[in-house]
Length: 637
Image (cartoon, rainbow, N blue to C red; front, side):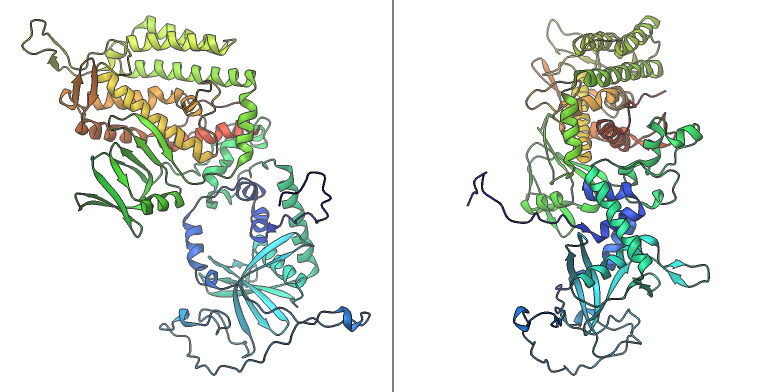
């Protein structure tokens, strides 16, 4: 029933629990805690996947642990105490316990009360000890919720055991120890157990790599450290402000969220940072891998049916299996035209956060299907707030247009047979004018004039000599260059070069839209391109500086390297479209360009263009959240 607004709500506000695992992350790095717990971001690495494998057995428990017995206190009347019913005595099960060998079957153990894990050191266990797995408990007084991997109970006394993937810390005397985040996490588990009525004076860490146990006594100093960690994590959570990145920390290269955090890159861009003040020329570490090892796939065979079997995509035509693709080697799926995707395959890709992009058969991009996406609403809130700030929009748009014009000029200087000095000079002047523009309307004019100059000399970058006859046998037939580019036209494109450019822009729009969605931004709310239903304005903003570097470079490469020839086009009236074979050849050229590495002018390391799109989008999110003051538009040298 809906309660009236003026009703007296006497219920106590619910406690917003902090997970003990997240407080572990806070002790490791407050920024990591913010990214994971507040923004809901996560990325897998070798270590996280291996950790899930280690936890596979303990996570399979049913979470049952007998409640502690409650005894009456001396100052209470017996009638005031609810005594729990005495559980029926269970007859001990005579069970043959086989010595731990290589052939021991761990999965045959009872889920509720079972024998010790054969991997654990069980020399000192008694027959009265019971093990319970995957227990979730919370503490209202601490405001903490903890999931215990394993609890070793002996009567009222319970010892939490937390599984770790790697090896223990080696102390100065050579003994095995624990790192501060691990000590705090196991201490929180012990404190939550105490708060739930159990007796607990220590915890234990089990390291899978060395199969060692490390005892962690719960003393006063560790309790104070855990309480300070709770207060610190809650302060960060309540502030809704991302903490600054660690500076030159050895933790960053091992962090799975390094590519999201961008610690050195952010530190370099922030004004008055310690790093910038002390070592302005210090090299930014290449923590981010140069390229994503996964690849996009394009399915354009009409009538294709795509299903899944296990973790493998199966593409079939007329019931015949044509191709199998491992899902963990795919970062996006692109469907062109009449290609069917099964519900099971779609559900799996949504779960794995693999975007599915839809194009028409001719290559017109019209949508992306994705999972729930990033749960970070804070950055989207800032995006909407900044989009209403006309000065912010103008300042960002100036940089985007300036970067695009400068990259156009660089492309002409690199690829034109004999670049016009007038065009180069005018493009340089237009780039300078863009930085002084006083409105978005005047900026559009500057950009349009620069595009006219650039495309006026575009044909000079085409270096193939092949002619086609326009109307064979007709009186007005003539021989003209197959890739005769006389200016930009579209909807529909009326020559092969414009057909390739339109297809390349559609692919780049899709990749920028995927990058914006991955970072948690709304791709339909831009700052330079204004709102229009159905127009991915932010994706168009992001792609402006990359039009010449990715889309137009891919077109030039496809034509000049004869990956696409005149036979790969169809003419229908005034329009020209790619054939199916032509699209496949151009997709190869486009993906080759996206996979090419380029040196970032600010950070000095090399990354692929696909990775670069994600980095630039994350830097835009840093600008929106106020962490950096200026957006570093990518301008090639």
